[in-house]
Image (cartoon, rainbow, N blue to C red; front, side, top):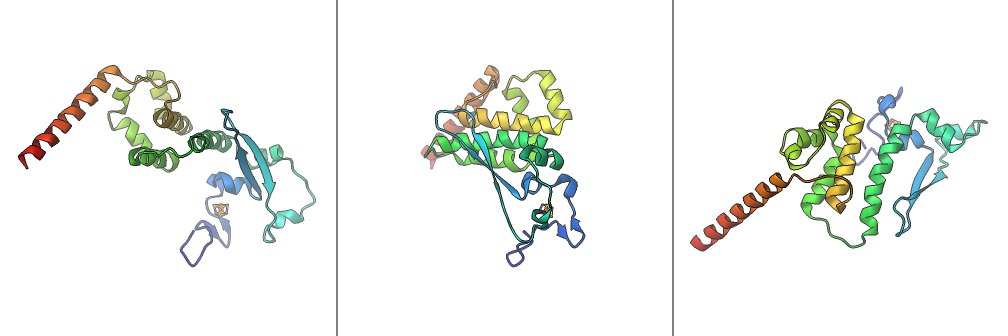
Length: 196
Ligand code: SF4
């Protein structure tokens, strides 16, 4: 939104949407709203749809009828749907866990993966990430070259790091080094406390 006073989208102009080719999924679906329902004992959820009827949407006056699939195809939502579903699975999983408190670090990672692919890319390629996990060179190459694959990878890593799900293998040597570092840091803190 532009500001507290002006609640309109910052990308709308008298000429229309300035980011139309890259508009988000909610804009592609509008005037359809999508929900997802998940039972506690099921791994995945079921999508359902509602039609949002607002006077300013003149499309409602058209004669043509659309099925959901026709509308999705027309709006080019396929790849957005695919990644959005992966993200929704993470959110639903967190919800089904009930009152689990995620650590500030976990929440930070969740927000990074959910909103900033450039930060996640730096996190993977400019930290010890690739030493900490055993990841096939083929996968590394794919996520380096393809943003959509990087996005999917980020969500599957998030599932692993939040819920322990998925096929990530922690590098044993890196795990030992990290543990050593933690013990050393905790030893230093203890020593500083005793001196203080
Ligand atoms: S289509 Fe979406 S991004 Fe574009 S102006 Fe409308 S609300 Fe904003």
